[in-house]
Length: 165
Image 1 (tube, rainbow, N blue to C red):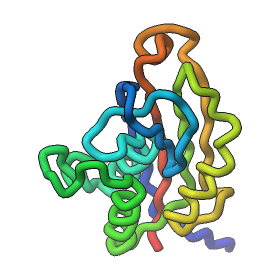
Image 2: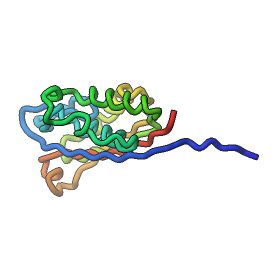
Image 3: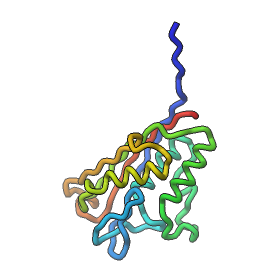
Image 4: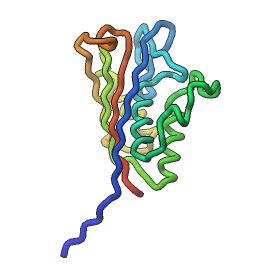
């Protein structure tokens, strides 16, 4: 008789949106993107990293990013979101979970993100201590529809699969 070990798998989804404004850096997945506008937020407003954090927290049933890093707390003002990500992955790991894979999508009318995708994947993989093959980052436009299509905001979605160690 063949015995298959069944892994305890958990899936979480994440979403974030931030407005584009002047005089801010555009950071996605911990990588600075060359663009004349940046994302407005309490921290560095990295929508991709925030969506991934929320997906991880959702899979681990640990709330959301605002619960752990409230925008009312001055300690987090301007903070690099990869610091948040490191903290969250440590919490999830201490609960006995590891990341199996991440799939994410950034929706931005401009700038074009294709030249940055490899660097973003590498930076996130390094931060999460996973392989680049475990994280996928896609970029698309909003076909000039809504606030994203008008170039006023950027959105990110993420799905994460965790398994028990």
